[in-house]
Length: 319
Image (tube, rainbow, N blue to C red):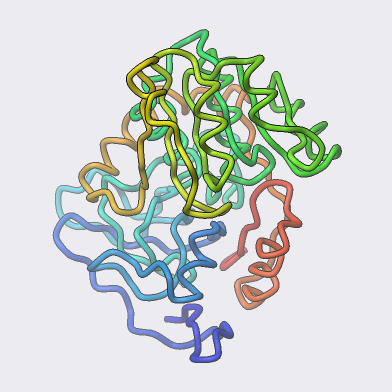
């Protein structure tokens, strides 16, 4: 079997690796496509190792065909699935707990399916479970034109929220409006906190944080929940602690990757029950920026590093 490995100089090479050995309760998937995430860039740089028990190579979400199952498994050989991984998706095959695989929604291609699990499970975890979002809430999403941001914008809108998001260009602003965003802030032209003051936020999913976080928190609705999932804008900021007890604001740190496989399976079950019909009806769309063969993983990473993508970048392993 082959997988993409990171060499000492951080270059990516399609190399021979051992075949996956399934543990109790795991299935093997022949991978057709693997979607990229910013966490892949962090892992390549040596800053985000996979959880124990997962392969060393990158890849958090894939689509493919089940090629092996244990006795009594709910899946059958030949089933078309997408799956959430702790790592190991940049490969020809992967072993994954059976409960971390999902049936591909009707009408969705293998490429599109690969881009669903990580982005939509992360959005569901943070907006619905951590953020306790309800219909009519004002939802703030940082980076609405990223693959994750587009998933979050659509999920929030699908669940009945008013969506406020940030982008880095007017072209991206126009595009995320087509996905349902109600208020779009061009972060290069507008003061984010000033705009948020006009739209007090009930739930925020923030992958940026940084020095402007304190000013944004000060604009939140009473009882608002601000969930930080990454610190792309920096890890340090100044916060007025009085906001927390005066208005009952919550500041929550959350990541999906560190959760147990059992918890991830529960998140995926809820995602399927509440959101899968959105894919089959066409109300939620999987936005693909570009597909590349797995052997061009370096080129795919460069697209993410330069923030050139409008939607997900997907590596094709098998046509």
